Each structure stands twice: as structure tokens, then as C-alpha cells.
Length: 361
Image (cartoon, rainbow, N blue to C red; front, side, top):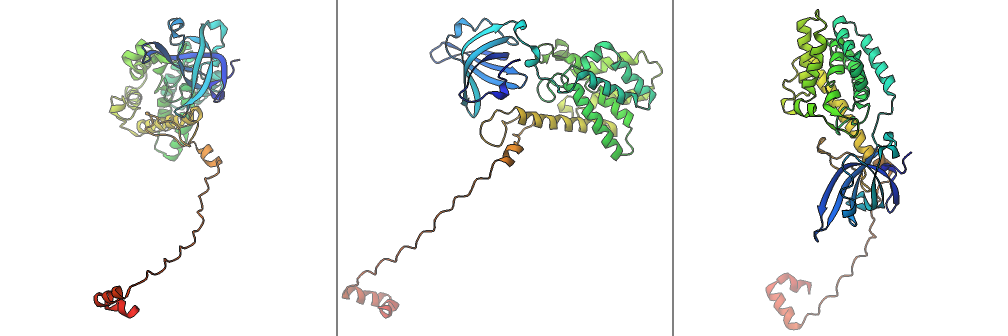
């Protein structure tokens, strides 16, 4: 097993371990010599790394998505750990355990798929149940469904993240449908299970997370519509108007035109799908930001462009004792300066200009 993981690194620690190269840039010093700027990772997080010396010997020997063994020193730079690499080499896949480098759900994927199939089996609308079971019954789709991440990096971005996200939405769907009696739970669950099914083919997750060519060209909403249309072609008695509702939920689940949906939600189940999807993704994004944050000091994470904010590290904020206010010692009052002596001439002048002064004197 890999050791140490990114999450275990400490300042001023010398390490010799393996990482996956997430990004690689060859930059130039002021002298014109090359240096390496890397983002290294394992399943617990990412690490900024720099290699300043002997770069020419190694810079063309590895690339993004390669495994490397590095030796170097952990230091703090801009309040975050940074690895200064002294030595490095590319290593073969046989020298590492893949599970150490790709984040994955803590839940068993087969158990999650079985749980999802059980939820679908409980749906009372035979047409909707038949459609969803046809998709989950496809061997390739089922294999991908229990493995795929829900996103490349924003939320549930780990192996098994998509099905974990969908199961969470199933729970939210049941809760919200019980609160709003007019909601058709079977229709809402159909949207929950199918809304991101296009991500099975939009994303590549065999070795790191990236977009496939199909994903780049079409996006997961269009891919989902294709998958659903293919299965519906084999269910000739599926009600056409019910099909329109299902398709609208897929098309509108991002909620806004500017967020990639060609339509906005136009009936309650579609609107509810959008909001519970958005809620679950944002809550997971917050959790992961706090869990993966590498800021050494302070109570907030780094700024998140997707969330448009930094996140309070609540546990750290509550555990640390509040700073004690400084109490300044009271200063003794300064003695009044002795009265200045007044000459006879000055006294008469003051008496003439300020009559009251003459009385006091």
C-alpha cells in the first residue's frame, strides 16, 4: 500500500513515494533554464510540486496520467504544502496499486447497484419501471453505472460517485414527494435515475478523469437522450405523452439555459429534480472541499470558482479556543503641570484683556 498519502504529509517532511501525474508544465526560470511545475495526486488529494534542478534529464521521460516515484521535501508555500522534488522517475503500472491513486466511493459498488434496482422494482408505474429496468438491465450500462464518477472534478468526482449521488437523490425524492402530495414519485425517480446516465459515456474514467471525444462533442444530456430513445424503441406501448415528460426532465435538469439545459423545468417533478440534484451536488462539493483542503492556517478553505466562495472549516473553527482579547493595564492619570509663574506686567495685561482672569488671580 502507498505511504504516505497526500493527506498525511507534514511540513519539513522528506518523502520518497509514488504519485499519479495530474498535470505537467515545463516552465522557464529567469536564467532560461527549464523547471517543472506539476500537480501530483493520489486517492486522498492533490499536491503542488516543483522540480528546479536536473530537470533536462527527466522532463521528457513522463507525461500526464503517468505514475512517478519522487523524492523530495514538503514545505509550506502561500499557506499550502508544496513538494520540492530532488529526484524522480517514471514507473510502470505493475509497480503500483491503482486503488491507491483513484478516489472511489467507500461503499461497495455491487451493493449500491442492488439497492438502486430494489428502489426501481418498487415503482408502481409499469411503463416507467420497464424503461428504467431496461437501461439498468443492459450489462454494459450497469457496469459503467456502478463505476462512473458523477463529474470530472466538481462533485462526486470519484469512482462510484454517480450511483452514490443517484441513491442520495432517491432518498431526497422520497422525502420531498411525501411533503408535496401532488408529486408523482415514480416520474421523479425516473428522472433521478436517468438524468445523468449520459455521463457513462461523456466521461473517461479508466485512468484519471477526463472527457471522451463523444462527451466533448455532444455532452451528457444529448447522450442520455440517445440511450433512452434506443430503449424506448423496444417498448412500443410506452405512452407518447409520458415519454415527453421523461425527455423534458432530462433536458431541463440543469435548471437554467445558461447552465446548459436547452429548456427550463416546466412542471413540478422536473423542477424538483433540478433542485434536489443541485442541493446534493453542492452539499457534496462543500464536504469534499473541507476534507481535501490543504490550507495550513485559518478557518476557511481555498476559494472555489464553482461554489463562488470559500468554505468554513467548521470543526476546526469550533475546536480552537477563541483568541483572548488583550487587556491593557489602566494608566495612572498624569499629574497636572505646575502653573506657570505670571509676571506683574502679564497679570495686568491678562486682567485688561480677560476680566475673569483678573478675578482668578
